[in-house]
Length: 219
Image (cartoon, rainbow, N blue to C red):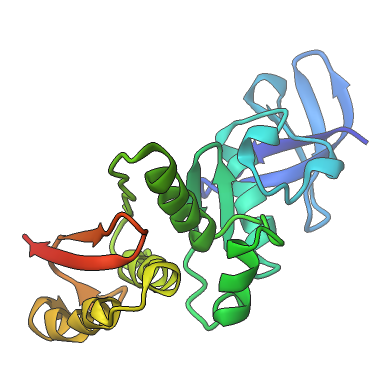
């Protein structure tokens, strides 16, 4: 069966199956069972089923808007909220607790027994490259309001604190979050505890790879 994406009148993309094609028109079957007749040129090719849910978008044969959205939705429906796009990590806010964090996961990413997309993997890569190349590393977390930027930053810091901790400074860094949030967060339509400020966190490491200081700037 030949799969394609068609754009519905409401703007959403739907994964359809081509029934027949005649001239410049195609007859499609949409997931709800309805049959549509659309211009063939308006359709977007879909990836083969074997690529459904791949953990790196760069593996897709067709890297189009509907293909990317479908793959993210496919993974999201199975609580796989992290997906790679080459060196970039795409995170979709689950708006619920997911069993993806904690000491067991930290140990797994530290020991390389787990390599699926994760904030821990990004933090681990930054820490390892800093030690290897002796060059400062940056982790940039961006997204719209309610996307989960603040929580993602906390998760990354927890991983760095776990691997580079020992002096107690790492816990002081983590404990600054509630104080800053008390002064700079507000309730919005999308988020009951939305950060209304930008934040730059510098974590300083010693030559042995231990956290020895930090600086937090807000704007």
